[in-house]
Length: 186
Image (cartoon, rainbow, N blue to C red; front, top):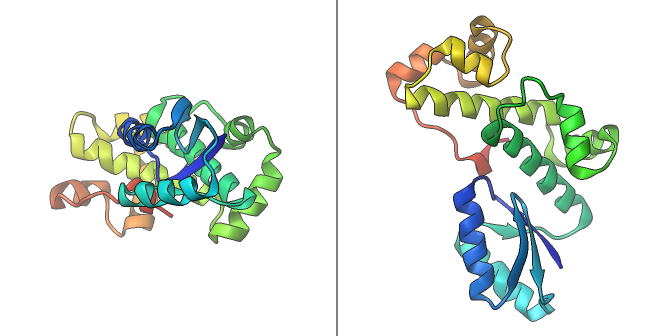
């Protein structure tokens, strides 16, 4: 049985979800951001117990086809932005379509209707969070960060950063401001 799980944004999340699932007697046959395949299929009572345990750990089971699709779109974007360096060469629509095996136009319409923002806006918000993370690491110049996160230039990065955060990347760095948890972006 495939379970769609909200708020899985990193490898530590995957490990935490695996522990919860295995603690509840489920064998995890596949685990990826936002999704786990388990055996045996839990009965309705086990699902409610599992839902409570996952919520306690900061996650949640996603019910319904639309909610599952939204969670999978978000997981695909988080993977692209935070776990690969290909996004500057990968077209967002192609990546999302390939990850979900569905036409982008339908996914885009559903996402906008349910989330109140476009997939592109969510993608930009995730990229800004990645920029914040890289600024905090203080291991790369703004030019290197702009390239890694797929902005055309430092000026483009700075303009988008200021538009969304109200401050420049330099001011953010000087202020020592914090990042938004990935499951709260959007």
